[in-house]
Amino acid sequence: MSMVPFDFSFYDLLIELVKSGEVPLSRIDEAVSRILNVKYRVGLFNPKASVLPVDGNFATAEAIETNRQAARESIVLAKNANNILPLKKESSILVTGPAANLLSVMNGVGRLPGRGMMKVYIPRTS
Image (cartoon, rainbow, N blue to C red; front, side):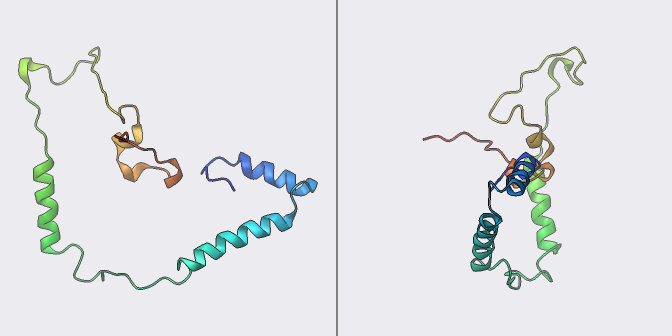
């Protein structure tokens, strides 16, 4: 089973192998059966009611105030010492860190194409 989203080369190759008889269709049926069985056991086919009811728990005055407080605490002001802002096009800046070259991080998590594409942004410290 391929776990790489948006790369269908495995899919195309598997179809060829099934058509040629190198991979029996029974093997595909077995794999699908195991996947569906696991999903069934963890309850994906029997969705339960939300643990937290929507009514009265979202967009409340308390939630709005919490969001505003988080925004106030996360605002960063840059001092414009020596009038360096705005940066000139020919300026060079150093961006460093574990996610420095990951555009997906700069655009926010909502821009990630899928869980299979997610990367580890913070290195382990073991």
